[in-house]
Amino acid sequence: MRRTARRLDAALAGGTLVRAELRVPQLATADLRGMRVLGTHAHAKHLLTRLDDAGRAWTLHHHLRLDGAWRTGPPGAPGAPAHLIRAWLATERAQAVGVRVHMLDLRPTAEEHAWVGHLGPDVMADPFDPAAGAAVLVAADRPLVEALLDQRLVSGMGTMWAAELAATIGVHPMAATGGVDPELLAAGLTRIRRRMLRAMTTVAQRQRRELLVFERTGQGCRTCGTPIRHARVGAAPQDRPTYWCPSCQPG
Ligand SMILES: [Zn+2]
Image (cartoon, rainbow, N blue to C red):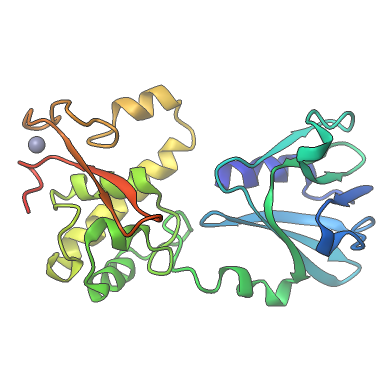
């Protein structure tokens, strides 16, 4: 999401909106034209675009889920079928077209915590306190990967990074966090955060070569050669896959 936020900033930040179509019923009458775009902030997977309306601060909230995207470029054709466009923002010099963007909503910036206040500290945020994050996870005393994916505890980590974190610290993905050494967990958060930040600038192929366990079922562990296993965590339909080395991460 940070990448998307940076792209939106490159296109819109500092500019004044000359076009602002929000194609969702609840915002059909909102008129953002004339507002200045301050910038877009990513909080876990939520995107918050802050606007200044002559001294009054507004926040446009949006979320890409799995299928949404923002297309940015010089003003012109939207570059997407009309029925998929949820938002179309443009300044004099650039535009951003939101395709299948979800959860579009507008509130005064002072109330934006209503969208993200329930989320735990964002692993990608600067600063991020790994010791505090580890303490929350340990206190939850839940299966490690399940706790890592619960955005109310720590936010921003998906299935891939949760599995990779467990592998990094050599802990079984279903091990209860209550029994995990907080310092080890904090070190894991620090390492995975570094990899997440690096992944933003690394090509996908190289990132894949560095994965320890994610989507490597049946392939040899990079440390010991044992075939990687996979299982689903959490209750259906919210269950998600995770991966681990049964030798390096016994449990
Ligand atoms: Zn191993």
